[in-house]
Length: 315
Image (cartoon, rainbow, N blue to C red; front, side, top):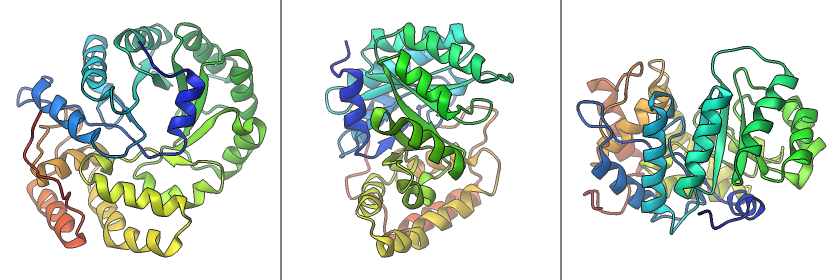
């Protein structure tokens, strides 16, 4: 059972760094429970504010409903006593409800509601979709503003008024005017988090729009650097943020941009580079090629961001 009320969860998440753990797979692309549990234990040993299981970086798009429930349950078992664990919900409304109810049963504290699967929809349809998911669970719900699910400020306000467990707004568009409208209309009723790819790049300017936190994919393999970066953002230390962008983040993005889909692949590549291999990505993604992996390994060393904790995997 969840130990946070939705509003307690929002208060916890809004002032700390968030991350989405990768899902470990073996050579046959099956879930590697031992590696996954080890990764969760390691990830939750740092000062992260929340972990989202089976999300985008966790290749939730490749998981069956049953696999998603299993991944979330393992995350709660391994990390839930130290850090809030949230799940993801997606697909059709019926599937999203199933994901939400499975997450609640597993003891997750909340969930991120992904855009509906491959269909165009207007505000009335989006509002009804989110409303049905919120009504189907008691845990906190965060919407993901991206792709075919762009929520107007009024739609967000309607959902916030109707559902106490609607607690957050994650954005992957970077549309400043839109974000200003959403924040101005809803204020502190919600918490706001950045979800653009390699969110560190946008963290400082988005902080001024009310986005007090963001989800860091690179936390998976350079957690200490990611936490230091977040601390610099919250301290409005422009010089420190710029130094870290130039030293690691921007060169990292250059490698990420070499192939479509590398946004997830480079995270698993980073884990392999530091000695905490969590296996391959599932298709249709592709793993980093040998040169890209070598370049990432060299960058981690040159930038001085390799984790200080022992790299050997322990449960």
